[in-house]
Length: 373
Figure 1 (cartoon, rainbow, N blue to C red):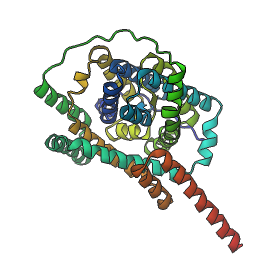
Figure 2 (figure 1 turned 90 degrees about the horizontal axis):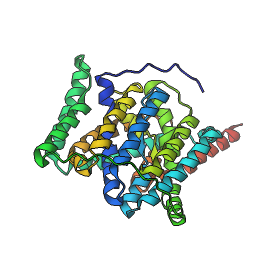
Figure 3 (figure 1 turned 30 degrees about the vertical axis):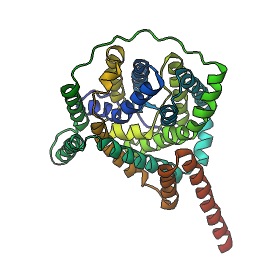
Figure 4 (figure 1 turned 45 degrees about the horizontal axis):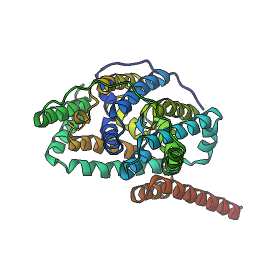
């Protein structure tokens, strides 16, 4: 793998806008998990805050920190309890730490075709697009205003030397509307966390219901697709084993203390880049923003202030950025099939379908060359 010199840190308005670019996916997920599973949102935000800062310092690039989406979806759908969530985080942490330490990602990287990874990117873009429409229907007028803000900054950045601060302006707009309609919630200080030690039943449920379905998505989306998109956007190479190791460490240090299973993610990278992130400074800024929220504003009433329709407008443009990268493929049949299956079914089935289809194409090409010889 070719290594390139890391950029220096930047702490400017563009990096700040990029720092909050992924909040449109992060906040709705952690809020939903906290409401359904009774996990304290303060501990979730605290783990995000600390690991945003750590990854920013370690990678010196805008490597995202995200909730594991398959785990989140199952937790919200089935109402999993904190011990089961902690068990899945610990098991996922052990798996990805060992995978990275023993170089397993390089082996996986060689056998997973880029067309399949692009399909995962495109599929997630379609899923985010669909999700954004659902959010925006909650209040289409607020969503339209937020979209207009983003479009204004996009056009202004093209024709004037104006930085794209749309994410910051949209967040400020959303918070202002929330305070106007609901008033100011009370400030609640976060208490010290208690260690969660899962029992055997929680470990079993966490393994089969949460860990096993999450692993294929993390390998493709959080590691392989993130590394590929980092090369696309910033021309920087990241060792996939390093990404696996940090995912392992994030979960082993967060899950037992009430945090939610964490990973990196191509959608988060697309979001942060779309709104201005170019260095690890955006991660550090993001962590510093989330830290006081975790310590003093952990009451869900604060998070629910923000209109979901405004979140939807951010998701809409994130899906465009991710989809733009997903179509950079050499085999539109494989990539398109993976994307369609991901949208209509799930990521795991899409991944298996894409691998089978891609290797079928490779086998047919070899047979054709042999026939010509």
